[in-house]
Length: 142
Image 1 (cartoon, rainbow, N blue to C red):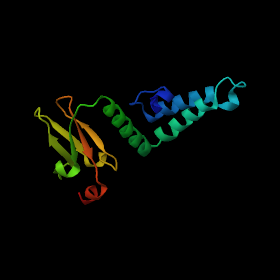
Image 2: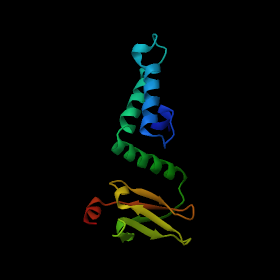
Image 3: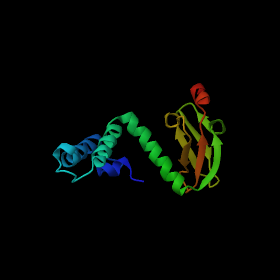
């Protein structure tokens, strides 16, 4: 799977300005009005444009980054447990959830990182992952 970052030729930690600069370079190169007949497909330009529309918006970029991480973890995951949000320890003082790993480490996720879709969280000490099933009604109560 080609990521939106790869479409723009950037790293996932690229700044907004870096993304914008790469987008502008690619638009000049691949825009259909700038091309000789059939030298590049309009699909390439549309992919570049779609990548920019998502990554330029901080909220949409955050959601995309979560989706991307989810996809990467799913491909290589060593899932230790599947848990409901209610099975995690809630910490009111720093607004996060935690769960103890069998290695003695901790799985920790901020309240704001949990959305409508399931989440995957790495242990801070080992390669194990927990799968958190999310329930919007429960999250609204925290």
